[in-house]
Amino acid sequence: MQGINAKEHQNVIEAYRKFEELVKIVENKLPQDEDNKTRKGIEELRNLYFKFHSLLNDLSHCTQQYEQRKKTVQSGMFKSIRKMKSQLKNKGEKYF
View: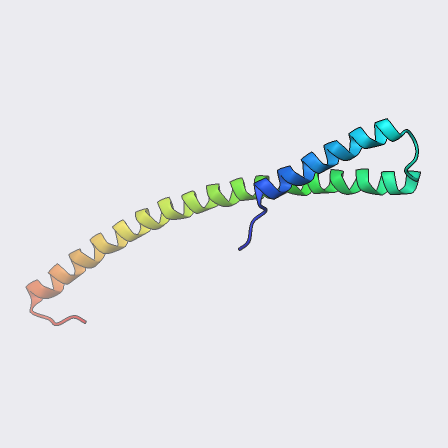
């Protein structure tokens, strides 16, 4: 899975800040539709970036829960296997 590069995202945000500064200096020389399109695009990028990090945190939490549960299940399963093997051995039966 490929993530969102935080440094690249920060570079885009910094470029947008410079864009905003230029817009203020030039004062309405940029067509309104281009300005609106850029502002809307940057807002969408920010929202997607924050959504990505939220999902990444959820995934990390899910992974931790899975690992904890896996250890619990394996521990119980291996304990039962040892017990059953011991019972088979005591009876003189062969096991796999």
